[in-house]
Image 1 (cartoon, one colour):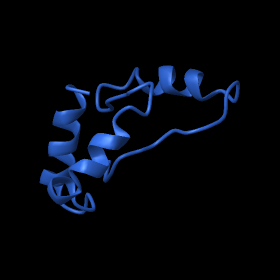
Image 2 (cartoon, rainbow, N blue to C red):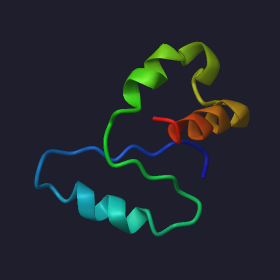
Image 3 (cartoon, rainbow, N blue to C red):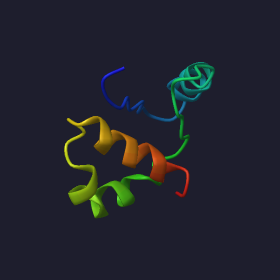
Image 4 (cartoon, rainbow, N blue to C red):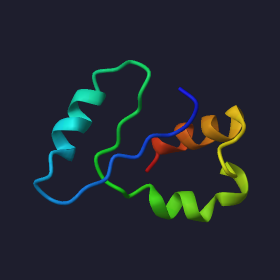
Length: 66
């Protein structure tokens, strides 16, 4: 996988089911709410545009502390 995947949708649109299904993959990190967005904005200088693997790694690492 090359970059992050964001699953967004309206209430009752099936996004919870899709998220549960994607969570079965050992290579994906799933978060069920968008509480990580403020952290993403605050640390743009660290995460950058996700074009480099280390930027994506820092972001995924920090998701665990959200």
